[in-house]
Length: 203
Image 1: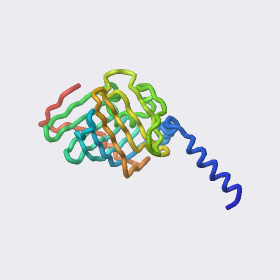
Image 2: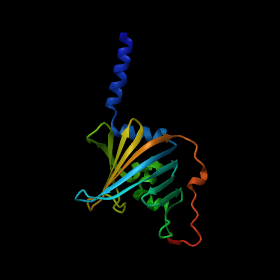
Image 3: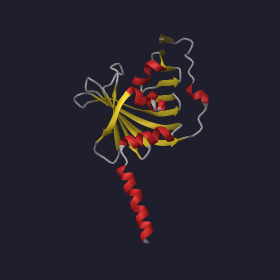
Image 4: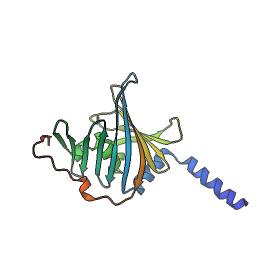
């Protein structure tokens, strides 16, 4: 192994080791236009007891379009079409709809699909946490988001974990896997038409 190669290798690792969570976040929002991933979401209460354990798939298309499908142990759809955010509960046959501009700050899927909007809605700084990921902490600038703080964990420029904490001590941890980025997604994925017989609540 020659000296020049060793120097390049050292520079590569030194550069990556010195990258902050904020730099990772900026790379993520700069380089991603669409994404698809599986997710595992676990909610725990103040005492650390598990209150929810669900899996599903996530897809997003910048700007401001996303689809968040819960598959197990219950089915639920959250769709953002860029104008409105729709939540459909098939078991209740109920649809809740809100304008994107009003709900974006309270919906993690909308935040990661919106990109630079996150810097207008949150105060963001680097966070130090255990493990190999680079983390940022985002604190809402307004009080109606439904959570007090949001952590984003990056592996390189890939977002692989999210954690939300609310004022009641509840913690929602989301881990992404099978991540695919910048793929072509059908536009109708991000369209939602309420079932004819469903109750529609909201705006």
